[in-house]
Length: 348
Image (tube, rainbow, N blue to C red; front, side, top):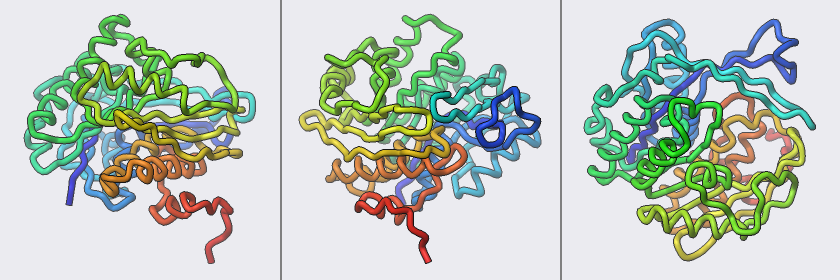
């Protein structure tokens, strides 16, 4: 079986119940998740062989995060141990016109203090065909960025397909200036075969802007064709990229989004149908669920980019109905939605 490897930080997520504000909370719901671990859970849920690589502290909280991965059938044999704490993030879930908020508490976490040489990448990739990282990992610390660069270099040398979700996080990039950030992200992305990113990611990381589209515009109408210029600029800057993909989110409110995606293969722009997500349960991990669906789709239908894109968009649409970081939708549920059945009827 083809094995996929993902690399990043898993965190403890603490959120007030329901739609309570931080100031109203006297207890928090506990979830373990993070960009790359969420992708790993999606892939394992689809029945694929996937390993998650991270650095965890040797304490009870680190063990809980490890147990969460094992519970979801994610491989953990290449996780390394050290440091004193697991990273934390606090989530206040928004509703209607009040957006969600995230507060990070991940400084000096085990993963933030990772250094090159701590992971034996040649051993990790010895039976792997795919490696996935996100722009969150190099944002954590210089050590995490250096470890990620080490990983993509070994993966490229060993012929492993490399994908990224560019995932710009303004609250995380604190250890370097914008010029250094662009240098780091440009080097990492230059090794990638598959690049996922929205219009903000492209502009913030590389200064690439879509023609005729203001990225600050909010609302329902997000034109797929407007992103063709971004895709072309990305493939020009990163010639190793065989496919450039973006998600299209129209934000009518925190509770109602439109959702679609486009994929550019260097010559053709594929567009998905647009979904109306009218009662969002949890949008955290939406992009990760898209990436998990995309990797599954590209591996399952290597000659059908349209079907791979459609699977990714439908999978991510369903994630918005699931509490927690990770997508637990099944293949059958995704394919049912792809087929046009959004009725949500009880299955008896």
